[in-house]
Length: 363
Image 1: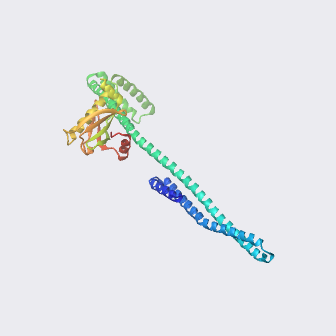
Image 2 (image 1 turned 135 degrees about the vertical axis):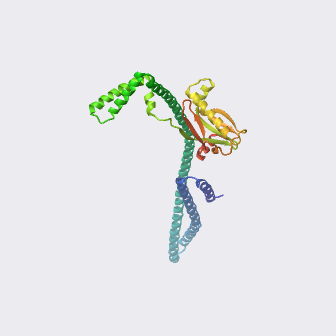
Image 3 (image 1 turned 30 degrees about the vertical axis):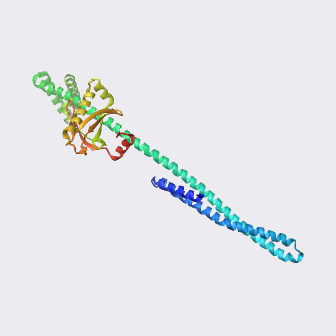
């Protein structure tokens, strides 16, 4: 196989590979193909000139021999000698022109070959960068899942703590309301508060409103000391309900995985029998998801849940899961002191499923 065939064969393979890369890679490939074509063209032209060079070289040798022969002849042949000399000069000029043309083509072929190598290196570098960015993209997609779970756990724990704080405040408000009817001193403080509040919000002179605000603060500080959080609870509405989409990951045809937002250290505390608000919330989440999927599945008897910790969070594997988990109704997690979180099941987006598959999550 000659050089032209090798270059053409290698170029064809490179072209097939580089068609799948991005715009920059495609541009390099086109430049590489053009350079290889120039290499082939100039090499071929140089080869076409070679017979001419050889012919002129033979002509030159013949002419020189004739000149030598004529020089040995007598004087009357000098005119013929001059004619042969002129022929020799013309042959030499033709030879020089032909050789220069061949040399020019060879230099062009060399430049084209170097240009082809240059663009091949550029294409290789671009392909390596593309593969590196693809790996980084997959890693970012994989890292997004634990970040999302951590953020969701923080949100749920904050809501549970807020519900607990709100429950204490509402209990204090109930005690305050009872004391307003049972304790004359508290009732008098409450009436004074309402009166000073009315004055502070009126169009009275500034000094009167300032005095009213001072008295109002004094009374409210007294009530806050007796019934912590009661006044704040009186001015707030009901607890907000959290609504979120919860993603699941189909591991096989008949099983799926839910990457629960419960951290590994909380799971360890549960195993050790430690009970705080975090562990209570974790238990409620596990119970809600296990019961919710089992209750709402059309294959209720076949569905089975297994739990294990992986990559810092609790993973719930549902064997015998229905084909389309997102057809489930919502799953509700009730907090200990009121309030709740409602989750709608949805399968992970394809790009994240692909990233998790690359990492071996399906295994």
